[in-house]
Length: 306
Length: 283
Image 1 (cartoon, rainbow over the protein chains, first blue to last red):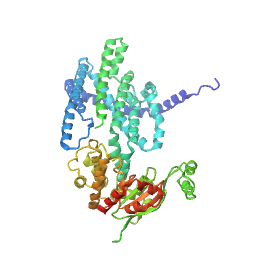
Image 2 (image 1 turned 30 degrees about the horizontal axis):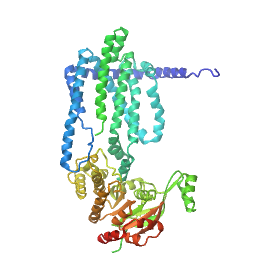
Image 3 (image 1 turned 120 degrees about the horizontal axis):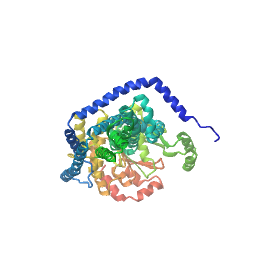
Image 4 (image 1 turned 90 degrees about the vertical axis):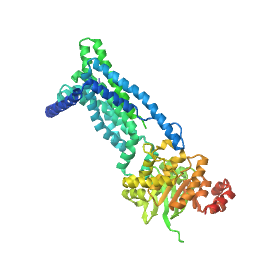
């Protein structure tokens, strides 16, 4: 070797040590507060009897599933034909939606039956909280990236990094700052799952038909009006696809984070592995799959265009 | 009655590319388009166009693709930034206006109808028509009233709750027209509004526009590539080629005294007798 090894790793470790020394007391305090907050949300869901929540989730997924999505194929030119076609179309929508409601009901019922309800609520809460923050931060960043080319160029390498760096690499350093448990898990999950919402928001806005943007300009919209009245509503389905991806990544990350004490279904899987109980491992894994399918189908439905 | 000039266009140039001023210099020195393109990587959209548009007239800008007609239209409401020249309307030079004045102008003085309709699919027909009024920050009840009136004017009463993809092409363009009329502008800019419609519908729309014009009494700037359409609809016609103004005149003048062989070629393709008949019917 011509050069000696570049001390990249050392630099990172020194940097982390420095941060730990100076701000970890802050982050730890914050993390205690957050941990309590998270537990509070979990207790909220656990307060209700599982069957009640199962019913509510099933009905919600049925309602969301019953939304109108298809644009009519032919173009009638009189009012009465159009109204008849719309009525028929809305009836047909109800049938697949019932399937979704039933699946949600049966799936969550099974989870309850396997004594995994509490664990699922934990995982579900973590996913929801992480997604909330990912979208809260990611959506504005996506809008900025779409509107300002320079910002886009700056943020893209960060996104690549966040999405492909193995998650453990930022999971482990999170521990001195946020402690073992849910908060570290959420921190790592947010980083890992934010890029899709940023990318797809940006893509959604950038790929809008140029003539619609031209029309918005021609009628004198300023930038804010254009953003809120035209660009965001039109990009909505792409943005929701980004949220869907973010949720799925959150779920996978939250399960992995069980390694550092996040609990939930990931914790069950982890425990089963440690005790060499593949049966229990399969049950917990199945619960993750059911949760994933329900979340995916529901958010996909919300992402479909009118 | 003395005709009032609504818009005065003087020496308008629009050049696309990284070095418009250099390209302009070269053009003035009579260099060829291809030389300008290779040296400056710029294309000449509009080259030194000057003419007046009178209050209340329908002025048709006609030319083939690449003639600069759509570019010229977009310079009028600053969708394109002019490279050089002036466009004076109501005592103000549109080219020199600051951003806020441009927005005001687009909101109140000029509106546009597009070739491919440009309707918002996420809004109902009524919401589409209301759009300009919403941008103007008109209160909701007044907005709805004006929008309904505009829909009636274009013959689409009752369709207000539908969505644009549910309508046929001709109906969609009527919504586009209603949207432009709802804001009650002084000037209506129409960019090949009927070119995307099938021939029979196109004829219907042209026939409807003629009486509508009389009702609304606005200045209309209408772009088309079809000379027959220009003759049918225009009070005066501007013929453009490669960014330059070739001839300007009434339909009769264009038909009976084409000023260049280029215009002659177009005129050849028209059934002159029929056209003159139509002109006589619609003064």
